[in-house]
Length: 143
Image (cartoon, rainbow, N blue to C red; front, side):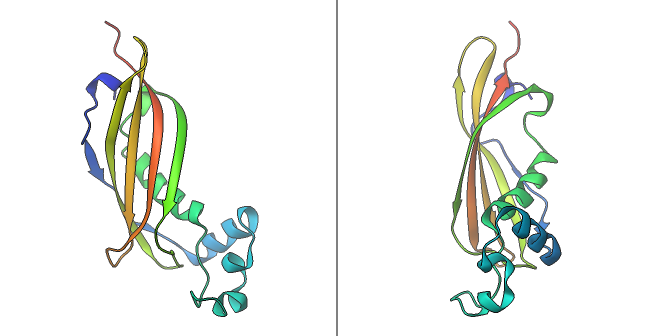
């Protein structure tokens, strides 16, 4: 979708993303190898009592669902930034669902604009677990 076709408030519900334990462990071992994510015995001694999913994995699981309905498609020129705020721990077996909303639009020039998409994510209990805010550079229609 071209930048000119976007409106603030445009939103879509995302398909559920299941945090599978084996994928969670493989991701953690490669990219976030700390005991809270990889050592079950250690995790039992923490206030959480069990392994936590890496926060970036939780975001990426939902991000993959967003890409299935991507607002921008072929008009995406580049990503600019992503900010993730973790609100509550995510565990193996959790089912995350999100809502993606266009929250800001800024015209940069005659060729492109900056679109901000906020993804609010809840677990299977409806509890907020994270919010991701991504800025993307998106093509404008030629006039």
